[in-house]
Image (cartoon, rainbow, N blue to C red; front, side, top):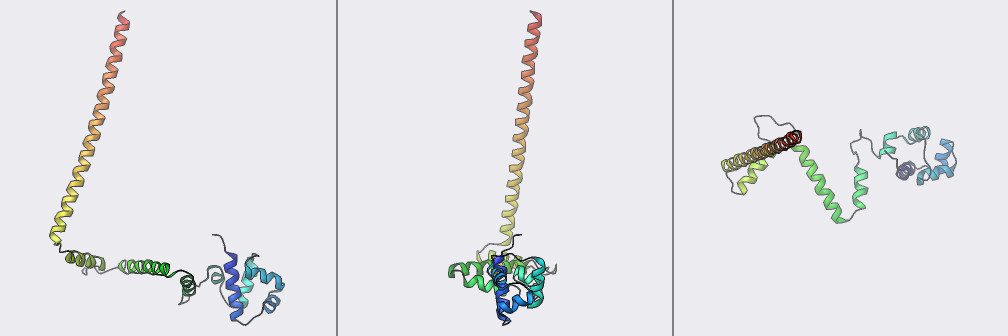
Length: 190
C-alpha cells in the first residue's frame, strides 16, 4: 500500500490547527525545524515511523487515524472523509455514490441471518415482484422446470455430439492404420 504523504500532511495540519498550535510550537515539541514540519504538512517530505509516533502522542490521535484518516473505534468512522468526498464531486456523482451506498446497505441487510420459518426479505421482494407482474408462482415453477429440462437436453446433446466426434476420430484413425497396413503389405509383396 503506497502512502499519500500530502493527505497525511493535511491531516496533521488540521489537527495542529484544531489544537491551536502554531507550526513553531509543534516543531519545538518535536525537536525539528519549522521548515521540516512545513514540508511534512505539505507532503513534500516523508515522515518516519518514530516521528509519526511522536506527532500522534502530541496531537492525541492514533497512527491509524493519521495514515488512514479514520479510527475504526470511533462512532463517526469515515464521516469526515465521505463528507469531504461528496462536497468535492458533482451533483450527478453524488447521486451515483448515494445509489451505490444504498444498494450496498440493502445487500447487507438482506445478508443478515433470518430464522428458517420466516421468509427472507429477498424472497418477499421476489414474491411481490411476481405479483406485480401478474405471474403465478406455479407458472414460474413450471417455467423454471422447463428451463432446467432444456438445459439438461442441451448438455446431453453436447455430450452426444462429443461422443460422435470421438467415434468419428477413432474410425478415421482406424481407417488410416488400415490403409498404412495395406500399403506395407503391398510393399512387402513386391
